[in-house]
Image 1 (cartoon, helix red, strand yellow):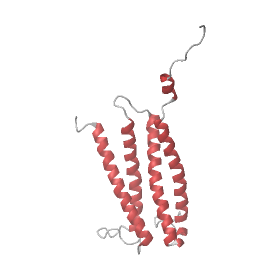
Image 2: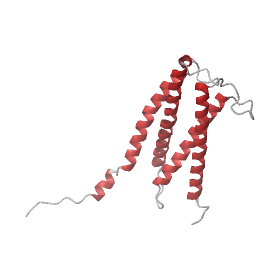
Image 3: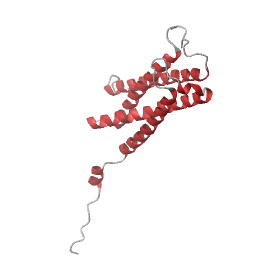
Image 4: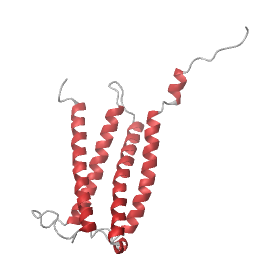
Amino acid sequence: MRTNSPGRQRLAAEAALFGLGYAAVLIWAGVCLVASFGPSLASPYWPAIPGLRTDTTGVIAFAVAAISLLVSRYLQLRRRREAPSTRQTTHGVRLLVVQAAAETAAVLCTGVVIYLSLNAVTHPDTLRLQLTHLWPWPSEGTVRVIALGVCLVSVAAGRYLRAASRSPSRAALAQNAPAPVSRGAE
């Protein structure tokens, strides 16, 4: 087996993207803890980069997590569904992208809801404040409601797509069904 095969390269990319996404989620979670219990989000995340604020780091980490986890999940779904002798149709690829996006959004938006709900407990006045210094809108409360809506849609879509991908198609069922028995002239 060659180590430079396209399958191995995609597997390596899938693994590297998952690792990057996982690390980005940890950074984002750390920023969320600082936001809920720490002194200031305007302070540097890491003293070696004094111009990079903690809250800016959280926004960047969340974006990196979303992109890398989505692509990693897509590559994983594609790897699991590909047979060595078949090619995915454009329609099949789109469904895998939608499923990967739904599953990634469900996980990340669940984290957003938990974080903003914790914020509502520790300091409820911030629900009316803008989420980040980078944009004037939306407020933390609005983002929590949006994240709940995204969770609803993405969990439902992900469940549907997982179930639909596992169930055999009607055409396949019709091909494998036994021929009807004729009870004509006996």
